Length: 239
Image (cartoon, rainbow, N blue to C red; front, side, top):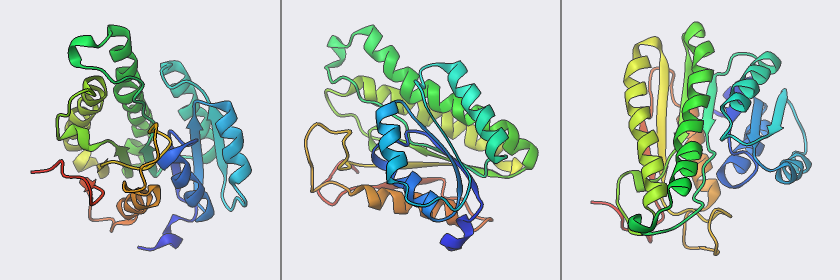
């Protein structure tokens, strides 16, 4: 398959106003896909809209807090009404709002990251799946992290929130396989985005992760890239 195959595909992207999600959203729109996208910041959403030079397909967008389940359900409903049944959901939204030894983690901090990194993408996945199940086709791509596979000190809350969603995704993949629904996971290593406090030019470029996601979207209909790990060459967190 090639990029032309994205024309008129209906795609929903979360976390679209920064980093991987932003780059991905712009490129999908440029390729002619019908794209629904969301992010938390109204200011960043305005910046994104200003960077979209031309829209070949339909778009639908909204800035809201994904820790609110009702807001997610409403957005998916509105986006489906505007664009139609989604061919692809890409869960990019995520947060790493605190770093701490496990013994120092505040319960509220852990609960917030679980809401953003586990509960919110689960709700998006569940709600989009409802129409995919009827259509008997669809692809769900979840942007996870290599922290799902390795334990590093000081990021226990982030690791727990990403790993718990990873476990849920693996079960869901098996549950919907025979219904012709692909449930995929990509595990980026260190990526040079605003997600980090300092510039890391030796880390992955955002474009490298986006290209990998495009490969997962465009793979042959009879194939599924269930899990894909992409790391910068400087990273050694693997067996």
